[in-house]
Amino acid sequence: MKEKIPYKIYLEEAEIPTSWYNVRADMKVKPAPLLNPGTGKPLKAEELEPIFCKELVKQELDNDTQYIPIPEEVLNFYKMYRPSPLVRAYFLEEALQTPAKIYYKFEGNNTSGSHKLNSAIAQAYYAKKQGLKGVTTETGAGQWGTALSMACSFFGLDCKVYMVKVSYEQKPFRREVMRTYGADVTASPSNTTQIGRKILEEFPGTTGSLGCAISEAVEAAVTHEGYRYELGSVLNQVLLHQTIIGLEVQAACKKYGIKPDMIIGCAGGGSNLGGLASPFIGEMLRGEANYQIIAVEPASCPSFTRGKFAYDFCDTGKICPLAKMYTLGSNFIPSANHAGGLRYHGMSGILSQLYHDGLFEARAVEQTSVFEAAQLFARVEGTLPAPESSHAIRVAIDEALKCKETGEEKTIVFGLTGTGYFDLKAYEQYNNGTMNDYIPSDEEIAANLAKLPKVEE
Ligand SMILES: *Cc1c(COP(=O)(O)O)cnc(C)c1O
Image (cartoon, rainbow, N blue to C red; front, side, top):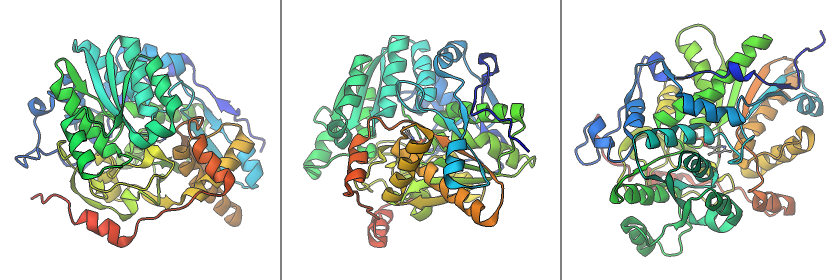
């Protein structure tokens, strides 16, 4: 049978979904509540509102509303770069000589270069609507900071970004994109916050971590009048906004009669994977369909595959709420591997619960094998993938090669979350053959897990 699927499937503008999907409404076991680190009691909206925008707090705590309408202003911004294409990877299939049908949802088609803009624009919108002056945030690899800078400039908000020092130094161009959009960018840890000064004293010469930059950004938000903090991953609200990805995939599949067997996404804090997969997981939870879903993480920061499902701090400074999640411990500082967006010690609480309940599986992959996949993908499909996204490419290729052995014509969908133009240092190391595959030892992981806070459940 001759395939009739176009290389790139674009929905019409009018087919962009107009609501986000809240998978918590369909979960029998809800994600555990965030806890106040002082009292050990579930956080109430009033306690979160000094940190986050009101409407976002409401979304964070909403375990019941299945669909949440996307505000018109947000939808209008989405139209600048959405719908994003669902691409049939004909060239990759050909290169692999696989009977599998491979599709990828490409989210790199905007200046931030990643899916992060999907949530940034929503978060900036709610901050503006609340009448705030500005927002603070952290950024690791730089994609989130760029996305939030773009969103803030669109809505006329001030944006303070704490950028993990190693990225600040490795990616000066990223920083300039943010500044072009009007953001104020500080290398973290910095001496502009109490917690930054404390970390610098304790670990002089540290290249920083996401957990540490989060502490600084939160402190900056609560100490500046008219500011709130915004986070680009991990939170329920972020996963909610990112469901635009999976809902578009569902709509495209329906339109073209495509039935995915397998859905693959890289997992840092879980937002793209959650966004891509949760509409499909919803079908599983409601008993309507079944899919094999795979989370892919770096072997250097293996939260799902080697972490513990427990309450932990979301940040190094231990000022944020406690979240129940798969974690490596908030003191875990992963080696400076190149998938900067996948270096967080924890994981989305929603995905953690779903993983715990067996709705998907997880794999850890090593850096050089990820870049090998990235290089093949770039050569045959044209797009230079982000190192983060290439984790998903690695496993999509592995699964397609398995299909070649067994002759199965599985349909594989993976998330291509972004482009790698700011990751050329990493590509340089790969091309020079000087890239290494650091994997933390059991002792290192156990030592960090031993320091998890004691929480009674
Ligand atoms: C941030 C980022 C990720 C990882 O974050 P998640 O919240 O796990 O999606 C993956 N890919 C790219 C390109 C990113 O910028």
